[in-house]
Image (cartoon, rainbow, N blue to C red; front, side):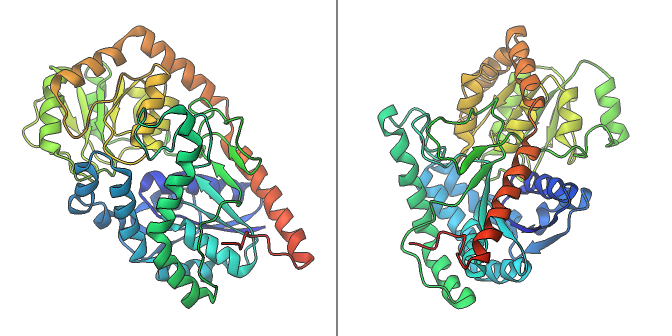
Length: 428
C-alpha cells in the first residue's frame, strides 16, 4: 500500500513520523513524509522519501512569535492563537502540496498543524484519514485536556474538557481550512471539526496507559522510535567525548525548539543550582545564552538523544513529548521546565510517576526551585524508578503496533471504496 504522511511542527513532531514511515517501508509499503524543511533531518537519515511543506517553523517559533504564549504562562487560548497563525498563513499551500503528493495513495496519515489539511485531502480523494499524534486529545475521564494546566479542571469535567479545547482549536483554524477546502479541493465548508477518524498515538503506555473509556479507533501504540535513530552509531565531536570522559556523568540542559522565554534569567538560576557540577548545555532554537558560563558547563550542538542521554545523570528539559519520551526511555530522571501547551501535562505525568519533582516555573525560574528539583532527580530511589520505567518502555514495540493498525485501516478503506463508500467522515 501507499501512504502519504503529512505533519507540520518542530523536530519533536516530525521525528516520530519519520520513524513510522521507515517502519511502513520495512513492512513492504510505500511512504512519503511531508513536513517543514528544517525538521526533515531524521527522514533523510532513515532514507525516507520526503518533501518540504511551505513555511518556516523556526521563524514561526522565534521569540517574537512564542513570547506571547510564554508570557501568558501557557494560556490555552494564547497557544491556540499562535499555532493557528502559523498554520493559517500556509493552509492553502499545504492543501495543494498534500493533495498532489497523496494522489494514488491508499490513506493519508495526518498529524500536528497539518491535520485539518490532511483530513480535507483524504475526504476529497475518498481515502482513509488516519490521525497520528503525540498528544492525547481523545476525550477521557482519566485526565483533562493536555492543553489545560493540570489541577485546574475538576475530575467530573475531565471528559468534557477535551471536546471544549478541541472545538477551540477547530475555531482557530476553521476559516483558513474552509477557504482552502473550497478553493483547492472543491469541498463544502465544514461547521464542525472531525471526530470519528481513527487516531494512533505514538505515546508509551508506560507513561500513559490506554484509557478504558476510549473508543476502538483511538489507540496508544507505544513510542515511535526507529532502530537506526542516531544512537550508538553516531560519532560525537572530540570535544564532547573529552568532556564526558573527564569526570562523572553531567547534567543535560536543553529546551529544544522552545523560544520566547528569558534565557538569561533561566541560565543564571541554573548555574547557581548546578553549583559546580558538570553540565552539558544545548542552546537549541531558543538560543540559550552560552556566553559567560563557568568552566563546568560545556556547550554542545545538535546531538541525538538516544546517544547522549544514557551518558548523563539527569535531563533538564521543557517537557515536550519527544524529549520526555527520550529521557524516560534512557532511564534518566527529569527536571521539567514547562512553558506552554502540553508541556505542563508531561511534567505532571513524570511527577506522578516519581521520576521528576514538581515542575519548575519556566516563566519565573529560581535557583532554589532548580536545586530542589535536581536534588530529587539525584536520589537513588528516583533513579531506580526511572530505570524501571525505561525497562517497561523498551519492551514496547510501538511501531509494529502502529503499522499493523495502519494496514488494517488501509485494507478496510480499499474494501469500502470498492463498493463506492467514502472511508472519511465527511459530516460537519
